[in-house]
Image 1 (tube, rainbow over the protein chains, first blue to last red):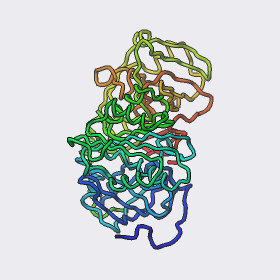
Image 2: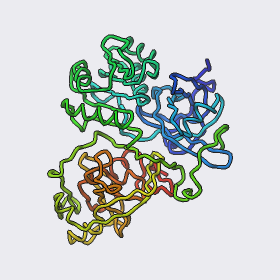
Image 3: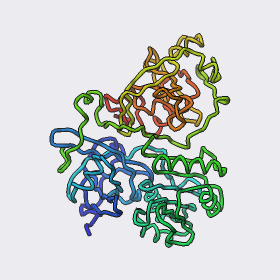
Image 4: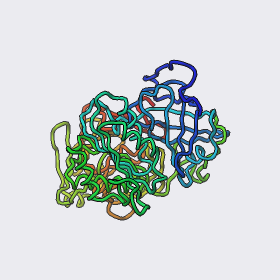
Amino acid sequence: MTDVRGTNGAREVDAAGRADWQRAVITTLTAITPTVVSVQLRPELWRPFLAGQHVDVRLTADDGYSAQRSYSVASAPDMGDTIELVIERLSEGEVSSYFHDEASPGDVVELRGPFAEHFVWRPSEPGPLLLAAGGSGVAPFLSMVRQRARLAAPPRMLLFYSARSWDEVIAREELLRQEQEQQGLSLYLSVTREAAPRRPGDFARRVDRAIIDTLLARLGAPPALSYVCGANRFVGTVADLLIDAGVAAGTIRTERYGGT
Amino acid sequence: MSTRGFTGRRPAPDNADRIPPGQHLVADFPVLSVGPTPHIALADWTFTLKVGPKSIKQWSWDAFTALPQTAYTRDIHCVTTWSKLDTRWEGVLVDDLLKDAGLEPPTAFVLAHSFDGYSTNVPLADVAGGKAMIALRYNDAPLEADHGGPARLIVPHLYFWKSAKWVNGLQFTTRDEAGFWELRGYHMYGDPRREQRYTND
């Protein structure tokens, strides 16, 4: 296991220059599901971020052609040395296929950010919080769950995570462990292409009103904020169901990928 | 700096000069928004033109659709790096709105407002002169809610967050006032050709 904390001691903090491209070394690459690789990156300068923010990654070919994409940071904001991205292989994805097929530890990419101060969690905001993830949309929530583990008196948090199968649940063992270790954190999984859930209380179907009602009941109080992240259809469905169940539209933050 | 092992997928040479730096082509139509998609009944739909806090004119859906309708085909560019070519929009040019209201532009800055509380700023020079419209139709069909329907602002030459979905008003402002994303780290102007993605780009 590579030492992801690095060996060069305290890192320089660079909040003002966050918009500049900087070099970042790939320290580890780990296949964590059949379609997702976890990438640990160590940037030259540490730029503080909020859970939920994204960074932009740029790759440049020998002839100068470059491609860039945005990725939510999955690691906790206070890691101080490396950030983790969870990158799903997309068909014809020129950046995701690089990370899945070509990249090796020690390779260098370019990074800028963090960016976008909307789909973010500030721990000083009141709870309870409802998080709903579809597939690789769990990335920003990993950051939030991991940050919550380090807080003294965090608000109640419920993560609903829909994936095609048990094997495609990103960071599954860690999430199960976090739920055991963190008081006030609840995890509900739904595996949409399996016949039955693996744990009592989980689900094995696409999200529907009955699931949303169950989540809201388990939360105990109306969510102060709801965060929904995933493919467009998943996010649209969850947001509409939350509104139907009485959650105020203005308290629902969304982040989507894919389209029509 | 080149990235070892990266070759990339370049756009076809025919299209290369239509793709701004850092963008890539998509065939589908990605959906991005800061919150739930509002489902707005046409009977409840209104559009308001304001100067500062003062309302100048308000249109109902029927009144709005009775205004001159214009169609154009444009390339669009999202700050999340996708670009889409030859999108066809139909609706009311901002020029025709101002004409119908009998309003000479009183300031050089406009803030667009949406049903969901979203807002974004665009200079007058970028919405006038046939450049921008309030679009009601996309590719010859009513605009879907996920893409901003019943009506969205279309400012095709700027990054697409400027083309506010679910738009319900334009407001002239004395100064260039930051909107939703401009207050949260995105560029005040947003020119794709100059890669003005984030605040200090």
